[in-house]
Length: 455
Ligand code: HAM
Image 1 (cartoon, rainbow, N blue to C red):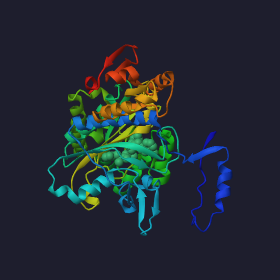
Image 2 (cartoon, rainbow, N blue to C red; image 1 turned 45 degrees about the vertical axis):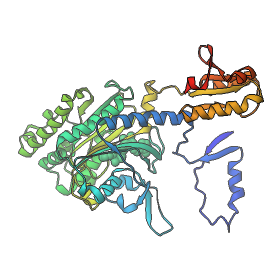
Image 3 (cartoon, rainbow, N blue to C red; image 1 turned 180 degrees about the vertical axis):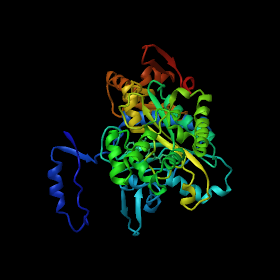
């Protein structure tokens, strides 16, 4: 049977009154299993195991840095995202009007929810606040390699600390999240920039303040579009002179901060900005993570709320989209009505990361695991088998057995399929003596045991 994906939405009608879509739908479905929406994933156990492998590594690292896990609702009022997140995400919202006439949206990112949750409770909390979360997020994006309509995203945020030390700590968590999964500096790199510094640089070369956001949005395309196309956009869309467009591009494409124009570097606001950015990079060096970090002023981030250090993590080969993105957002909590608190954090998705782990051969092979499989020689031993199985389960062991009367051979094969470490075999002789045979499924070794030997 083929597996189809349902691309054209079924009209939403009252199913009790109007059922004439059913034969049409059945015709679409002929010879296929029930469809899955495009861009969504099923997680059968072997795929769920990979998700668990990734999420548990993320959890271990976050806890090692002292972060506490939280969550929020998957559905939020749409206003939380409009204006706060920026046009790109707002155009990708899974939004609808609920039965109470509220405009709502599935969460496309976690940061606005975090700001909302803290807005209501941060005043009484000691700072800094270290929180992490593993939400499933939904964005109506065109499906492509590394991009789906849903993904799980590790969010780690540090709130209430304004200095670059907090930015460095946050990036260290992101880097360690990937190292925990076996990736090294040969596999990935963190490209870092500073939106505030870039804004100062743009102002110094003469970009008007009200054109800064649009300039950043155009510069965001530099990784994907040719330099000449981006220059033409600056001239055509923002009415920059050729000279200004050239100076703007020189900023974003500078191989290092030292390569910026000497006159620009002599501005006192620029040198202050550079000193603080250098401190951020130096901190990571002191933590032993310097080899993972590269300065790249092209990293501006698509989301509207960032105000300082920003970063994105990429595979070294440059074959995949960003694995992780984050930075400082000092105004967001205030914007959603909370205490004005500085904040910094990141989101790391499981989709691109899964691709990278697969490319590097770092996905563990899926193995079924079971402590015991109980095998009976005849139906007569079944009550004793059930008693043993329950006693072992109560002691925390995993146990399975055949539900039907089957030959010994079939039961032993089932034990193998289930991944049992040990088969416990009970026959009439064992029943009489109050014991059973424990067979090691790998070595084939057998020994006689009683229940208390196993618990
Ligand atoms: P973001 O850059 O939009 O940031 O997403 C972070 C990461 O989530 C991306 O680098 C990517 O790996 C993954 N991701 C995003 N969209 C998709 C998609 N459609 N399919 C698969 N993976 C995806 C944020 O969301 C910020 N709220 C992160 C943040 C937290 N900033 C501060 N705190």
